[in-house]
Length: 425
Image (cartoon, rainbow, N blue to C red; front, side, top):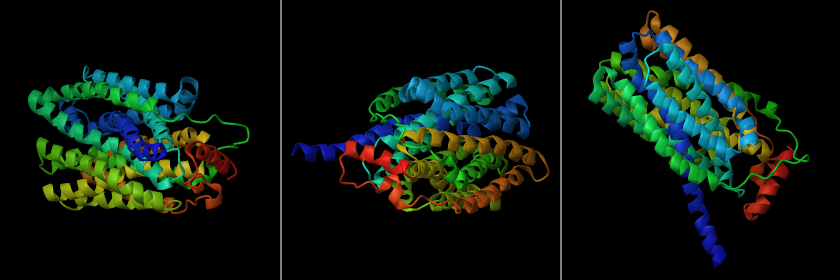
C-alpha cells in the first residue's frame, strides 16, 4: 500500500519540482532576454538610438550568454549545480535592477552582458536539473517535465507584458527604467521557489571511467540547427514590438500581443510539446519547431493590424520555446547522464552565437530601406534553413540510448542502467 502511495505521490512531486525550477527561465529569458522588446521603443526614443545600436545592446547580452553557457558545466562541477542555479538568479536580479538605474549606453551594455552571463548559467544548469527530476525510464514523462521547466519562459513573458506597460503608463518616457526595476524585484521573489525546487532534485550519480565520452560530434546537425534557430527567432522577439508600433499599435495593444504570446508559449509547452517531442525521433522535433515558428513570423510581415498580430503571437508563442525543450530532450537521449550538463551547455553556446548575430544583422537591415520588416524577413530565411539542417540529425539506435531502459525498473536501478546504456553508444 505504501509503495502504491509513493508511486502516486512521485509524479505530483516531480511536477512541483519542475514548476519551481521554472522560476529560473522566468528570470533568465522572460525578464532578462525578451522583456527588452517591450522596453526597446521607449528606450530608443528616450536615448536616441538607431536600430543597430538597439540590436547591439541585445548582442552584448548574447555575448555574455555565450560565455555563461560555455562555462556553465565548469561552474557546476566546481560549485555544485544548485549553488550555480541560485547564484545565477541572484546576479540576474541585480543586473535587472542596475539596468533601471542608468541611461549610459556603455553601462547598459555591461549590465546586459553580465545579465546574459548569469542567466545562461542559470538556464543551462536548470535545464540539466529539470532533466534529472524524473529518474525513471519513461522518456515521455521526462520530456513533459522539461516542458514544465521551459514553460517558465512564457510565464515570464506574461508577467513582463503586464509589468512593463504599467510602468510605461505610470512614468511616461522614463518608465523604461521603472520597468527594469520592477522586473528586478520580481526576479528577487522568484529566487525563493527556485531554491526550494533545486534542492529537491535527485542527485546526479558521479561519472566513472567506464561511462565513456559525451561524443558531441554526432550531434553536429543539432548544433547547426540551434545556431540558426537562435538567430531566427530572437530577431523577431527583439524587433516585433517596434514593428507593431510602426504599424500604429499602442502601448497596451502591444502589451496584449506580448501577453498572448507568453500565454501561448506557457500553455503549449506545458500541455502539448512535451508529448510531441517525446514521440518524435532524431531531428524531426526541432525541424517541426522551426516550421511552426516560421509560420508564426509571417502574419505581421504580410499584414498590418491587431488581428495579424494576435495570430502571429499565438502561433509563434506556441512554438518558440519548444526549441530548447526539443534539444534538451534530444541531448538526454543521446548523451550519458554525466554529460547532460556539458552537452546542454555547448548546445546553448551554439544557440547564443545565433542570438548574438541575429539581432545585430536584423538591426542593420532595419536601418536600411525597407525598415524593420526587411530585417525580420531574415528570421524567415534562417528558420527555413534551420529546419533543413535539423532533418539531417540522426538519433542513436534504440538499443544504445537511455530511453530504452525498462520503465518497470526501480528509480535507482534505472539511473545506473541509463548511464551504462548511454556509455556504450
